[in-house]
Length: 342
Image (cartoon, rainbow, N blue to C red; front, side, top):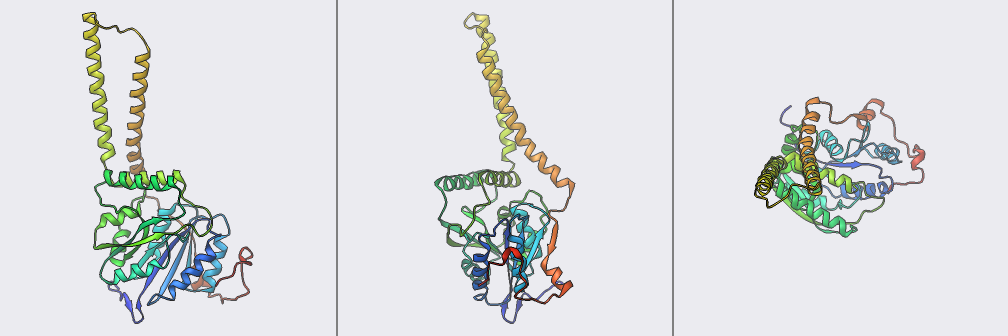
């Protein structure tokens, strides 16, 4: 059936996709806030918790939540595939007329989802949440984030909104387009910016992390920025080309000057210090340019292998259909005996 009815009698159906990685400290608070949000949404809502290879007690707790409340679904990836891939896995499984992606740390306030839905009802296909304030972040994090968005804007031809993460609502048409984009090194916010459609924003103040520690240290942010630039721009390759030509031209001019100076008796070619410095400089630049080219070649290598983007180890929705196991309030995993749902 190609034309599915996207609006039921109670209102639009919404899917919430939340990637999880070692979030046992914040999960009880998250579930409570999500349940409060669901009660305010007009229409059926599903919550997809995507475990990205957690090594703490996150998985047993999420399984318990899914058993107690059928609005929750747990997809467990077979290992850690990364935040962007976990988002993709959740969006592939989403059945809603619109899908909202948000992080588990509650820096993306669930209450903002209601504003995203209102904009979507006005006819926008993509509604992204723009941060106007960042609480609980160091000055270094704020400065580097600002530099990242400025660099991204300068390097890419796609208009990727500044101060916007992955917290957004995506309509079914944009979601189907997203599923047609099979690239491996995924930069999700750039992919949605690239596809166009009618887009708008909702402003919000980003909160401090509710509990636990950040799962995006500096090196992961650098890697994400690199993927974003390489995926949506050829400017680094052009920079390597013109920088190589400029250095070669400079070396040629210096060689000519040295030869003329020697013949005229105005300069001497003796001395190894300047030669070593120049060789080290040229060698370093050469390695840097080779590294840029290597990023693109590596991306091609990853694409042509055509491996699955992710592997699902367990899906609570599939198991609930097979087992039809009755839910019992006393049947709790040992890891969550002391954690009660509100």
